[in-house]
Length: 248
Image 1: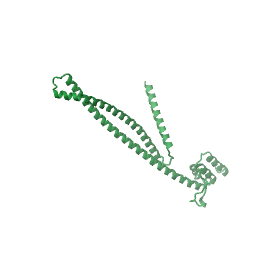
Image 2: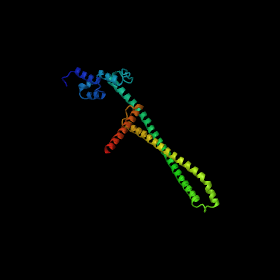
Image 3: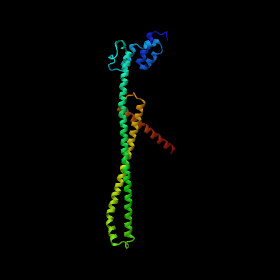
Image 4: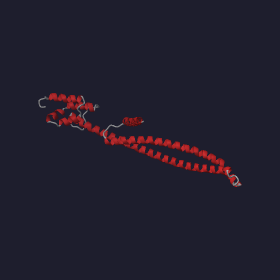
């Protein structure tokens, strides 16, 4: 290592930075290996190139907080790196709050759908009970008219005849109401599954954001994650179908 001149080592470092195989982390690691590489890795030409690559906007401007004695390219890079890190942390906090609000909204919608399903289910049970009672009344009235017409007295016969038509119309209305309740429950269950999928996807993104707190997050990354989840589900479905076909 001592046999190689400084120009050759300097050129090696420049080529590494130009090819992006050396970043600020690698350059800082090289600088602590020996005094010679520490001196070479602190040169402004290398850090200016890193500045132009990592912070292309206004990379030649020196921050006012740095004095003239410490305004080297490395110190400027450190200043801009810390400022960019603060910006990314603030952006992450905003994205985290947005994602938490999305998870809370999905949870609220799920609870609302569960409440509606419970209401429709209780309504369907009441309809079924009333429909069953009316059908028993209709069967009893038919039995009275057909098999035992002589035991039915005048007033009772009149009451039965008056209740036949309303009972039939009420039964028809209850049957229609029962079908509507079933359709409502099926639609709510479908909405619940879709909302649950969105809730789980948002929750996974939130866990990922908590695990990597300084990543860049935007709406495009969220849609990409949803597409990745969909592709994974399709692969699972296709694999299960293939297994079933092989078993047959």
